[in-house]
Structures are given as C-alpha cells and as structure tokens.
Image 1 (cartoon, rainbow, N blue to C red):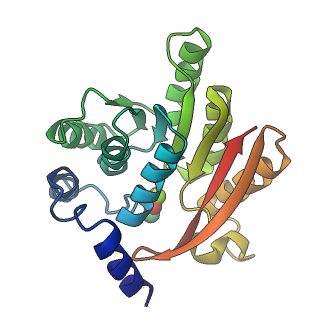
Image 2: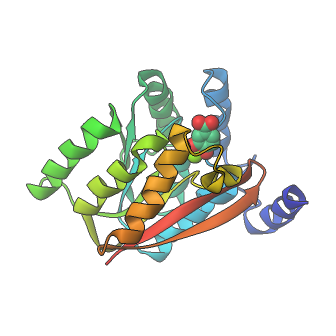
Image 3: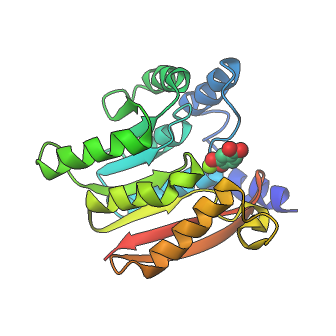
Length: 225
Ligand code: DHB
Ligand code: MG
C-alpha cells in the first residue's frame, strides 16, 4: 500500500518531476545505461532533501556519495541559489554524474570532487578554515556507511550554526536494532552515528523511519547548535 500512497501523493505534489523533467529522467536513464547501481535516493526523498535546503535558505550544500548526480540535480533544481559540492569515490560514477549534471545545465552550480570522502572532506575543511570556501548550510551523506560518523564530524567543522545534515539508510529494514545483524559494517556505521550524535553537544539529532518504493529504511537528521 505504501507504493500506492507514494504514487497518489507524487502525482499531485510533483507531477512534473518524472518523466517530464528531462534532466531527472536523463540522469536516471544515463546512469542505468552506464551500469551504475540503482541505489540513488528515490524521488520523494530527493525532493524532501531539496525542500529542506529551501526551508533552510541554504546556498551551500555538501553531498557525500554523488553516484550519478540524481540527488544533486534535485537539490540544485529546487534551489536556484544553491551551490552543491558533491564527493564521489568511484571515477566512473563521477564521470557519469558530470555528464548528467551538464545535461541538466547545472555544471556551474554542482561540482563533483573525485576521491574518498575520508580524504576529500579534510581537504575541504582546511579550505573552509582558510576562508577559501564558504561554510556549508546543508549536507546529505549517502556513501560508505561505516564512515557515516566521520563524515558528519568533518562536516560539523565546516558547517554554519543551524546547518542541517541528513544521513541516508540508517534503519536498514530494522537491522539497526537486530542483535543478529549488528556485526554488519553498515549497521555498525549506523549505530555509531546514532550513538555519537546523541552524545555530541554540538548536534541535535532525530531518526525518521520511512517506507517507500525502495523499502523500509530511514534517515538521521541533525542540526548544528
Ligand atoms: C544501498 C546504498 C544506499 O545508499 C541506498 O540508499 C540503498 C542501498 C546499497 O549499498 O545497497
Ligand atoms: Mg542511500
């Protein structure tokens, strides 16, 4: 039933996003054609992120895990003043993302930095501290799950007060609390994130569980004090 609910609400609230938005359709089709895994944020989630950005009046966003650029295109499309810095470890994914972003006409506002998040984020942090880059008002973390907390920690150091971060895939069909799954690296990454955000006086966090076409999962959202 949750797929039907998505279809119904989607048809009224964002009827022109698919298939009539050529940039989004092209991003998905071209990603599939180039054999990228089908694990990008689903349309409702991507739109939710874009509207969070808008509500926060964000002009700078960090994304960890570009994949084919689908989410970044959503963010930039719904936020005409937003600049997105997106980090992608896989060179093939980064190349396809740049194609998709160029097709969308968004190359001026979405930069794709190639490299591992654990290497690129410290570099970005230094640039922010040196005043060479503005602080970030928003982040979407959707990469190697074992480094979730590392990415959020790095981002907090280069975030504005009041900035918002959303981390994908923390509930994992409830594996988050399944004693038999706690050894999985992705589950360990999600648990560490939840526990560390809970202890960190710089952050106020919440986890929202979601059901959607891509199953039962959820995201963590945290705001910088
Ligand atoms: C996977 C990763 C994701 O970020 C996601 O949203 C869904 C699945 C995966 O690695 O399988
Ligand atoms: Mg994800």
